[in-house]
Amino acid sequence: MTGCGPPVDRGIDLFCVLCHTACVEHDRYRRIIDTCQPYLVTSAYGTAAESGRLPFGLEIKPELCFDPHRVASGPFLHTLQRLDELTFGPVGMPMPRWVFYDCAEVPGGIFGFARPASEVPLWVRYALDVPDDYEGPVPLSLYVAIPMVEPGSWHTYTMCSLNEVAPGAGPANLALFTQAVGLRAFSMQLAYGTTQWRSYKLGDHARFGPLDLITAWTPAHSDPTTLTFTIPVNARRIEDALEIEPARPAVDDPVIRWIDCDEHSQLRALQADIEAGRRFQIVAGPVIDGSYTRVPVREVTS
Amino acid sequence: MSRPLRTRNDAILRDMTPFLVAMPNHWSWLDRSPFGLTIPDENIIDPTKMASERFLLLLQTLDRLTFGPEGMPMPRWVFYDCAEVPGAIFGFAQKAEKLPDAVREAIGLEPGETGLVPFSMYVAIPIHPPDTWFGHNLASLNPTFPSMNLKGLASITKALALRVFRCQVQIGATQWDSDALHIHTRFGPLDLLTAWTPAHSEAETLTYRLQVTEDNLRYACGDPDATLEYPEADFEVTADDRAAMQDLQARIEAGEKYVVVGPPRRHQQGRRIPVARVKTD
Figure 1: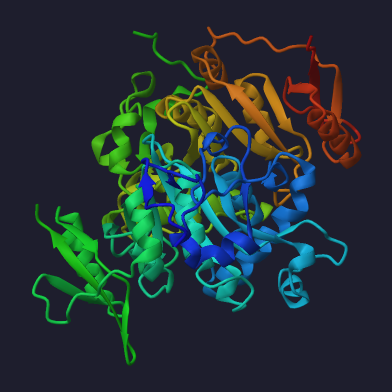
Figure 2 (figure 1 turned 180 degrees about the horizontal axis):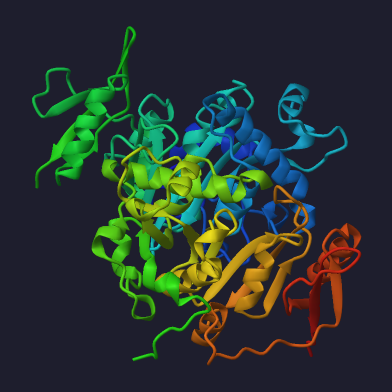
């Protein structure tokens, strides 16, 4: 500890009062802050262009702001798509390039962390199909967010880090940290999200929880085992997500409904309960016991 | 109260029924009676409900029948994450039981299947809620079923959709050689934001901005009382002239402003799109 005092929550920023730097309590993520640089892809028409300051003393440098309307942004955007292909291709949901443009870059934005090509190992460059003569930044994580009809609400439907398919490509917990900073980068008040019950990402999302369930079984999606959730965004939730692993309830906790993620009948039953007007929250990440994956859900009665 | 909407094909408003797909918390933000044409409550579809599955699947069929041959059909997760949850989908539908057998078969309806069958849709997501939207999909089965008298369906669908969304500024992207440019230019001059777009699946994509007014919505529908003025063109871009697109893009990035001022016209060397330069002080 440097003696700067506890961080003061000013509503959106976690700055130390005395020295206006990221408090040393966030030294746990220092490796990301020191070795990776935040980037933002957004058009001049997106709300993301007006988004405010980043926490932890981070700043997005002008050369790391990419406008999809400019030809020069092409090589970086191509590498972003490659990152998405590597992480979502195996589950059959890679994002076509036009979807990146029409449904992310122009209406909203893409936030993440990158490293200069010169500092990225050759095997990472190879994995991302980075040309030999490319000297720009190489994205290691991405977080997509687009505005919703209701002002203040954003839909965050894609996030990933290269660590998922190439462990060690970036510092540990890069995806979690990207999500934490991304929630602030877009100045959102309520974040909607979608993921699958068996996705390892549910554990990361649950750290920002509890997650209010909008759907538990989603036939409108390519994968009906998709759940839709919301997270109210505030500094406390972000701080806790980075520092605290949510305590998993006891197996025999009477208020907890343990959802077996591979039992579709349970997902459908939970969805039927939601459609009947009952409210549920995911209170912690999945628990894997042998070949079983279960997620703790509780009903909200007040 | 605004005057009743007249279109180039009033049979669409008379014989088809409008629908809307949107999250329930968004319904109060949208106009559910555009130009006095009320969307029935039973036609307002909640994408989070299991019972909506069949209709949403038929939207995907509509998309596939419209765009399959062009190579950019929309995956189901894109419908959900990039339309139904954040934005909205408006269009016109017909009751399955009213459709000829040949049409039912082409769409893939089950024998005896009833319910709404979408024939057009306009998909948009907010950029700057509540008044700036990105329209990323306009589909119509008029070309697929030419005998059904659906002429004008795409324009009428987009016009009413923009009213439903309470859109004042619409951003969109299409290709220089796309038939859709005939429709988008009916709404008025299109400010060019890009002329060459390597960020898109097809670099020969233009991005445009449209200022939405009541007059241009009525004009696009074919209202005989509506008028719209277009600036005179300064030059034309041939739809397969990549060098011209790249040159125009360089000029846009240098700060010059251009507007598409009319529909493509057929020419011996291919389609040509009229463009005007906006004089800036």
